[in-house]
Length: 396
Ligand SMILES: Cc1ncc(COP(=O)(O)O)c(C=O)c1O
Image 1 (cartoon, rainbow, N blue to C red):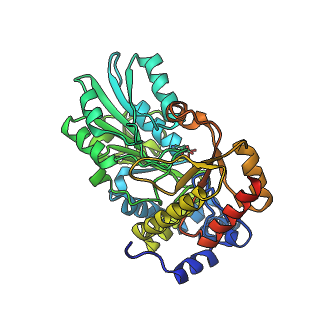
Image 2 (cartoon, rainbow, N blue to C red):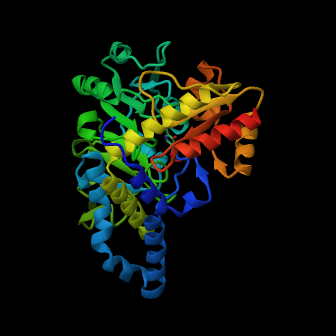
Image 3 (cartoon, rainbow, N blue to C red):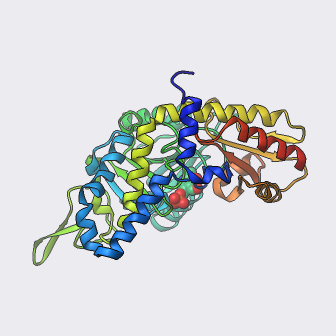
């Protein structure tokens, strides 16, 4: 393992995160502990708005607000004109997905690990537009087979929709392989990168996706209520718009208008500038650490946690497949996931419960319900993992 964060750096990053002093936080796939600088950025901005006025503060911070787009673009190797700042991943995904001009009989191909919002979106499109969608199951070893995707493509396939890292499993989809197939067949490719941004390196050129939806509060450590949508330049004009205002569209004449020439056409004018700035600060913070380095540490900690959990009698780790990530899922014999979570919370250890509904097809197929999800971030430590395992032994 190369270029991993040093112990000293980890301690420094923890010192910059006030939450780490009181809480052992293994719910980074729910919402990470934000760095202090992100929290302070938002609060200070709100104070300035109260002091000087909203529009006036926005003018003062115009460059910093603009930088949010540049940092996001840098994070995913896009152009800032391809970024829309939205409230969360679901909003981004729906704007992209429902922007597509579906016709009856069009086909969508997705994977078994697709997130609830997206699956509901697909079902909705089936009922509304008469599209057909196909789910490519993972193989017995838990791996997505790109060949099965390629075999499922017909001349009616309009979209490939995939979730990079699912909500309730530690597996990662081979998104670059999927992108190569999408490009080869000239099919739109929408990627849910909600769990992967800030977690693993993301490069939209390498992945070859046309649209990518992300939330801020998870591995990016941004405030809640933030997210972004990437839409490749060449695809922007192909998507329908749902909201229009004087910011997203411009007058051509008194009787005609046209959308902005960038991805901000998918936004609306009024939004929290404080949160936009907080999102930008979180992305800048992640870039400063280096996503590749963060990813190395996340993998190290997640593998360590899985190994330690396997040593605890009565615990079953559920993650499988060749490429695993920072999400670790398990069950405790004869204990409901929520009961385990609540017991751990008494010791100030945060985990979450992965419900079947979140990743319905995968969970049903593997007969899983209410699993415990412990998601590690680079700021977690070996000692915290040890304490989690001690607490779990007591519960068992
Ligand atoms: C894989 C995945 N996609 C999408 C979402 C939705 O994100 P948001 O709540 O920001 O809309 C989640 C949330 O947990 C998720 O895990």
